Length: 113
Image (cartoon, rainbow, N blue to C red; front, side, top):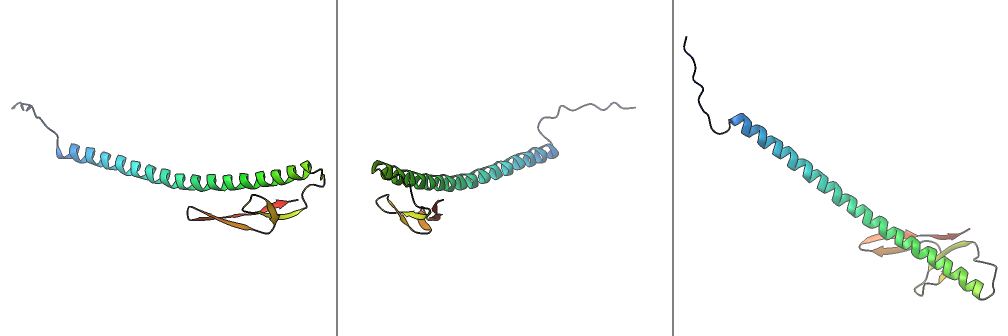
């Protein structure tokens, strides 16, 4: 019976190369998917931040109008209703206010109960 001599093989087999390539492709596809989700989330968060800033602006306008009434010794407060913010940051009766920022339309409604 002959003994097979083991050859000192150097290099990789085709199966090893295919396996390594497929693993690298899967990692690359996963990385691209994560990046796309991150970019989509960043856009949504940007719009939420803009909406929050507009809401805070409305709260500040109501607070300023109320404080102005108090400074003028008018303790009746703001009348119940819906208001919009004017260019000079004052309140006036109105319904919805549409504001466009960065090609996105926001609708703000300020309601005093």
